[in-house]
Image (cartoon, rainbow, N blue to C red; front, side, top):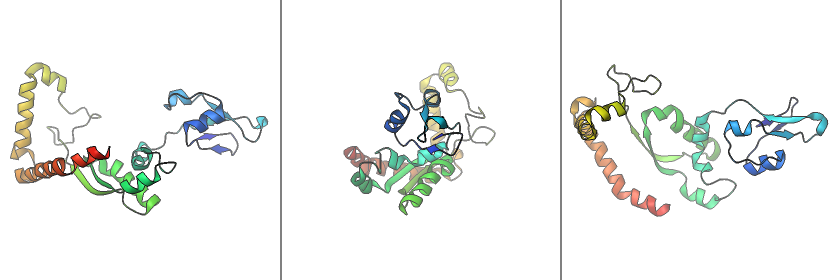
Length: 199
């Protein structure tokens, strides 16, 4: 979004529009490559130029726009979009409920009056020794490279396999995890071949 010191606001909905209005060639939309680009006021040179706002819009909004953005809907591919929405399923971790899943659903309901997906496959979280979620921010996880360098890949692989199959590792027990694996196997046999045909 480009604004002037007055009340003029221009929303750039394409690279072509930005290039046309600014006269600049745009190769990359990251901030450091477009922040310097100005757009002359449509009201005349005496009104100065419009500059890009500093604020970054919520990244989850962009992620939630995925069903539309990846095929450039509504500007093109309308029939393709109408055949593919709602999606068959979304698969992600539990931590995505407040981010991606939420914005997918909110945007789809607001724009289309329908859900963004039919089914949701949601995995749990891996916990650190202190019982908190393993997190890049907290750095409460063992270094994968250190583990690989000191013990080797075969040991790490076997250890992970043991932990996954260990009943102690899951609050819902091994039957729950077995059901999840069966469901994933069914998906891989019944759904994934069709996905390859689509793309």
